Length: 125
Image 1 (cartoon, rainbow, N blue to C red):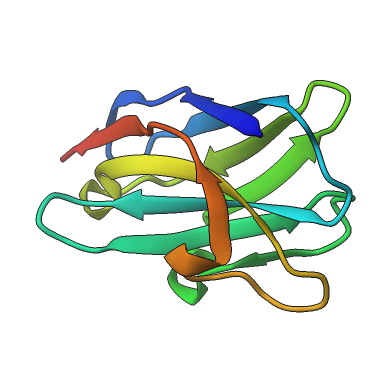
Image 2 (image 1 turned 45 degrees about the horizontal axis):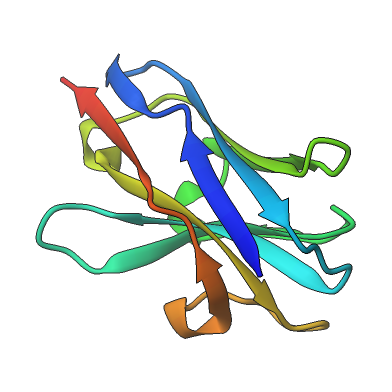
């Protein structure tokens, strides 16, 4: 079992930045992938970015490329999502999740087995 706790959300003005953290406790797996998703009010939960346990493989939703950067520090069991040039459309609850799948891209909710509770990001115009 693994527990995931997100932090770093908050209120920021458009054009600002935030860094979200996803701290994992419990068991870890070298074949795992940690992903970030977000869910805006009244909308589906969408994939944002993911990174392999080694950090050698990372990928993004096309619309988030260039503004968002995913990274990890395995010594701290933490995955980060750096978000720059934030827009009001980025307002959502951001979730991190852990899944398994060597050699393929995990971009859907069903790909992930463990989820955090989410952290709210609000971008004002």
